[in-house]
Length: 267
Length: 203
Image 1 (tube, chains in turn blue, red):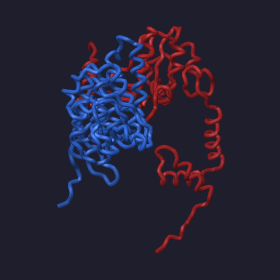
Image 2 (cartoon, each protein chain N blue to C red):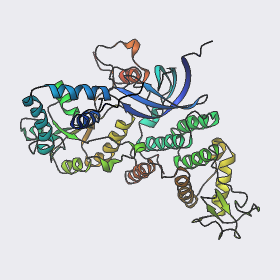
Image 3 (cartoon, chains in turn red, brown):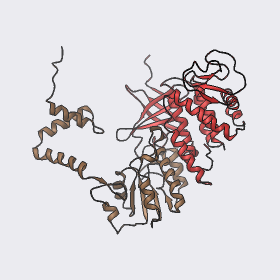
Image 4 (cartoon, each protein chain N blue to C red):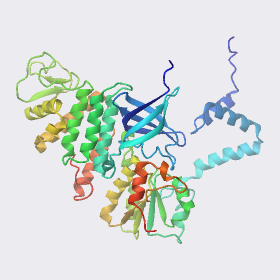
């Protein structure tokens, strides 16, 4: 029996780029086929039915025809446009950051339905939660764990001894905490991590957002988590996420513009 | 059978290579254009070469609006008959003639030369935003129309500029989102149709 030349799937558009005069290549993250790239022909034309629905951060059902080099999207139906994200620059910048992380952590075709569910839930949660900064840190920890890069917080990554409840040092290269006896042998710059931050990171790794959002965090812990996770992510991805600078820039605008549309942003 | 390894004359190969670098020109089209240029009279091909050279030598960015021009300020900013109290912000120089063809806007323009694309590493500092703010401060401008493309990057750019302009007390607007003339409602996507209904007007 010949292989079918078309298939239907559902996914979230995480990236797009222009192709030729009027086409667009979109990267869609799906639960059943992982990350896929396909051409949306004519999507940049003003009368295109596909263009509006294939914007990044939109959850869509799509019909795809398999091509020799790139697949083509023939039909699109919006499941959730996540419109709230597009009407607030602070939320939009953070949603783009999440999409970039998902793109960076996944290889083409690697299937991970849990990661899809996380992405979908995070994009929805961004539009309703008050503390988006806590959501971003939770998202970073979860994405690292799902991609297999979750840092080890229970034992020393060098010698395997159990680490007690106190401040420790994190090695990005070794992928976790190192005990006091091993800190000299790692050879890479170690990051100091307070006991409370370690507890929060372990908690974020183990629970869903419904529990994680109720954990009260001090400003000190938040800024430590942000700094440590940024360094760890930059090491794993081999570069700082490109949109991270924009998130910071927009957040700084929000702080000087109190009561404006960025009031909800606290990153 | 092995190929004899035919290779065109060096100047032809060079021309094909250069044409192939142009957007939308594939290797076959580049070859066809190169052989066409070889066939046409000398005068015609020299006119093309001169036109390309002149564009690179004479074209500058207008110091007022950053549009591409050969005189500074450009024709639009130098035209006192235009409405000096309205500025339309666009992404690319190509958007200016497109909006001018509508005949619906008689104000001035400002060209950003790009759009904020965080995932591609293009931030606000890479665009011509500073010049716009300088021009607005203490000016007689009453309205800024943010006519960026209605996609995620265009919206992000518009919101960013809106946040910068807001403290100046200038009215900020953007073109309506809605149905294209001549289209069928049946084929409109949900996002566009939703915006069109929200922005409905008295008949």
